[in-house]
Image 1 (cartoon, rainbow, N blue to C red):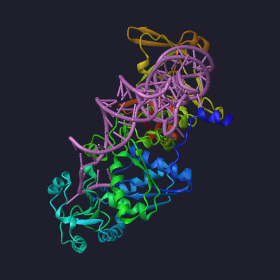
Image 2 (cartoon, rainbow, N blue to C red; image 1 turned 135 degrees about the vertical axis):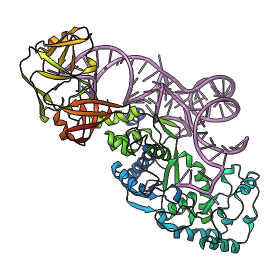
Image 3 (tube, rainbow, N blue to C red; image 1 turned 180 degrees about the vertical axis):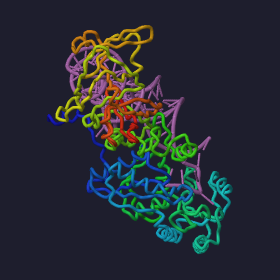
Image 4 (spheres, chains in turn brown, yellow; image 1 turned 90 degrees about the horizontal axis):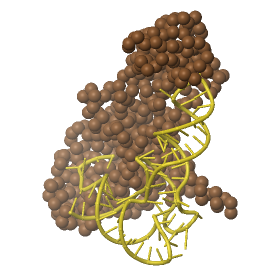
Length: 486
RNA sequence: GCUGCUAUAGUGUAGUCCGGCCAAUCAUGCGGGCCUUUCACGCCCGCGACUGGGGUUCGAAUCCCCAUAGCAGCACCA
């Protein structure tokens, strides 16, 4: 009784149930190896992964490389790296270019069953016939002739563009997209980087063949595949195979970035981007480089779920997830952007102890030794600022002579600084700092940071009052960091 | 043009199947406050939505119809 009441208002954090999944599932992630994975891929990859983990079962990585025009040989490796980064529970991997004989065999079977025919009609002509729901002459030719033509495809008697295997569907189907769609083609060029072939299955055929052969029970993919799902049903029906359960989620746009692999590649080639991990791109490796945790990506994507509404992915939501992960672990350091040198009059040498993490004293402190001269953030020293507190050090009075500031010691009292509403700002000892370049999506910020940051190579840290950053590289004592988020 | 899918706050999401408990959930964002030697974290308060119009009904975010908008497909891509 009470449970029922609670249930009502307790919003569920889990994905909706999948039909027929009680006894486990077999699912797949099926990227095309044309480049590294991006956020869009992560949605499919993580959603399927989450269901496999929820119900138990197998999770197949299937590399769909049946179009040599869209294969980047380097992508095979990149995809695997990206999947490892995401932490998917892949249980087995298949590559479609290894499986061409399987598809050929099934195609022959389908022709024998009368479910497909080998069409030599001109493509434009076929299109016209399709629009007016009319069969082309090849459609009704005897099975023997189709088999002969199929063999001629395989032995390369036919050349590229001369012939195509079509699935018999329903020519009167109201949706022209359903009518006798193609299943195999010949491609003479380019050659496939992994296999010698000239007859290639089209996606709708190889997908059905593999989903069936691999025992896939549930498919979650974008709604751009809705039409394909319907087309694929014809193939299942011809073979008498059991159809998996499908879910199609809506289209996802991402503010501010291009997700098209071909466009990213173009930009890289033009020199607009530094590479696939350019921090302005939406690839997983770009996110990784910026200090986004795979778990944050996973949570953000799961929060979106499998709704079929078109959505726009917001960075804010991803950053919020990432911050929850990163804030408790990131050590704090001072980074002074666009530093100006300030000599503090009247101050004796001090040694500042700043906490590595404000809510975890056990991590200890960093030591910053003040002698006489410090580096301060230039942009914050405007003539209306007459007092600041150097964090963990002391107060500083600023006297302006026109636009020239003079700095003098103004006591240790934190209460004074509070009373004066002075900002508590980060600083660095002039004699003990390292150059640090901070790269943001908006541009480059030159500055300096604590020498100890060098030891954080590869980690996400927080530059106090700036935001979280990933320490990307250290070169000759110079630090390069990437801005993650506030 | 043809076919189909969708429509809840700035963003994401719950609720829609089985109409009343929804003057609509949660997160994020934004505004304000508290805490704090960071403009981080944490805590508190607030802002903000059922695309429009008809209909059915005692009662509609939920069912029906129309409109509008967005998206997808109609490839020898996936």
